[in-house]
Length: 298
Length: 175
Image (cartoon, rainbow over all chains, first blue to last red; front, side, top):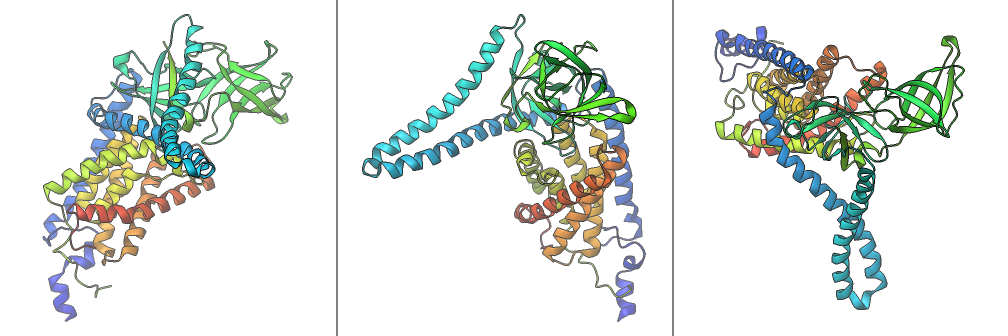
């Protein structure tokens, strides 16, 4: 019996790891490996091509149709998320009203529905009012972009915005909110762009520490990952830096304009062997998950 | 072991063309969810990867050849979302899909536990291949924790996705 089963399935002992579909012979054994090698090579070629186009500030042709297909879904999902959030918040306040006004249930139901819509509109209006007030103070108005995706990979701290190269966005475009610096555009597609956040571990921004408008020290702000505060490193040991001091962009390097708020110092520590100081910074911009619109500096 | 039961060659294999349409539609939907929902499920520095899980489950319900293709497709959409290290995503997901398809040819016995195990292992393979090509800037233990927890999340997600893909014509007879 064992001999017969061996004859029926000669492939099990030798190369049974590779499925040959509907029981073909050894000639089909190479196919999965060949396909794997071909796809790996194609993947490397595509990756190299995309890396080169990214350096040149263009979107790779390969990803354009994929992003174009995802874009309307992402826009709809982002709007649906806001609606659900408003309804969730209103539901609890509506339940309190219903308990307190049982006799007027019909009126309370009507007021609850109206309240849901008004709360949602009010939150949006408040947010946009802050943005508008900020924009009116600018010499060259920045471009407003909706945030349509958040941290799609655990390996990167990034968001996706609903503006791209057709709107004049290019890689390294500075992204901020009225509260402070958010990051920079890493890749600009035709319809959407990926923004690398300050919290990404690959991020680095020249910064100045200010107290009462006077500079106290110069350093580099680096990201420390999701949910972490920012790190301010390479401060000179003699820099007079204290918790509560404001950290702003230095403008050195010519990419990020100066004096954009980055955050406030929380703690200061000394690196005595290297005669340096470092600090932890609480970011000025809202957490990435709370971003709904951002400003792109042109 | 020379006395392994014969492989069931009447099930699995490449799915019919209509099922591929369902796969690509799911790819778009899960890609949207990956960019709008996944970050809210972050735990211990890890978040689920819907696209990788879909590719691995499709590989589970077919074979290593199909797994290469589903992994490649999943990597392409991930690269479109993230915008960085596109080649690394493509290669790591292709390899993981192939491994998942190959493992299922050897291990699969209609046991749902195998779905969990293979998805977990193949997810780890994807993380290792990715880390080899694009080393993460974190401590090794921190990376191991994130990779392990992320793979576990993918394994849990694999069960409903496997059911969904079966309803779309993938792997009839495998589960």
